[in-house]
Image (tube, rainbow, N blue to C red):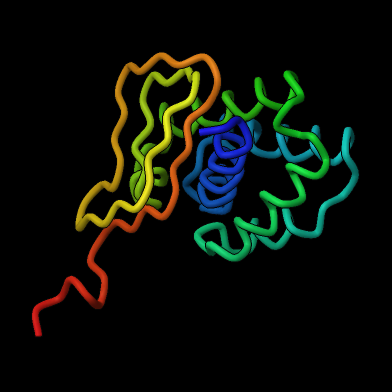
Length: 152
C-alpha cells in the first residue's frame, strides 16, 4: 500500500469508530487530531467531511484519496505518524470497527503491502504483529454476508 492507502484507511476506520457512542476517548482524540492536522496543513477538504458521514462508501473514499494525494498529505511525516496513531488506537480500543470494515489491524508498521479483491463472510484481511516501513494497501475488501453470499 502506498502511504495514502494507510492514511485513507486510518481516516475511514477512525471516522467510523469516532462516530460511535461507545468509542473510546483515545480513538476519538486520535481521529480528530488527524483530521485537524490535515485541515491545518492542507486546508478544509469537503471530501473528508463527506467520508466522515459514510466511511464505508468506496466513492467517498476515492474522493478523499484524490484530495489527499493532490494535497501531498501522504508524504507528510507528521500526518502519517498521526494516521498510525489512529490505527493503533482503533486496534487497541475498538478492533471490531476495523473488522466490520473488513480489516483487522494489530501491531502493524509498514513498507508496502498491497491486498485487494477480497470477499469474505468474516474478516476480509487480518494482519498481526506485521512490520513494514512504507505502507499497506487494502483495496476492494468486502466482508460479512452480502446478497451474493446468501443462499438462493
